[in-house]
Amino acid sequence: MIDQDKIRTAMKMMIEAIGEDVDREGLADTPDRVAKMYMEIFSGIQEDPREHMQTFFNTDHEEMVIVKDISFFSMCEHHFLPFFGKVNVAYIPRNGKITGLSKLARVVDCISKRPQLQERLTSEIADVIMDVLDPMGVGVVVDAEHMCMNMRGVKKPGSRTVTSAMRGIFRTDARTRSEVLALFKN
Image (cartoon, rainbow, N blue to C red; front, side):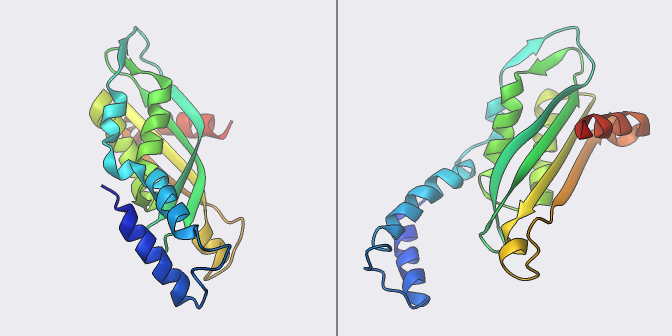
């Protein structure tokens, strides 16, 4: 459970630590706003992404299913600054077992709403889909911009990081992997 009182206290301490007046008009309500915001942006900590994929359908379709450009926001666990971008997800159903398209987006939301690394985010999305659906394969590509690279350190706004996770046939069959990567680009 997220402890809003501790967040408020910590935020007051941070405001004071940077030399600002925590009671100044523009900052007086900031600790409460941050506590409420953290409830929302870290809500995935309290969720199991597998629960979002408990709706299944049976069909004779055993070809690629792709959901592209799923927007996400997450927080870099190293600096607690946002990173954001798009996720592309593909899977090939086994024995006609499919899930609702929105369920894939919900898995992305759940896993991204925690302190995160992009590499782990990518792998966790692929692993959850693989575990729950048991498809022939899963492919996930995440393209994101990291505020920790934009605002501090190397200060390179606009730079993007791309990660991928391939499972099953997407990993073992070069033609299938090439096909999904080409479809992700269109």
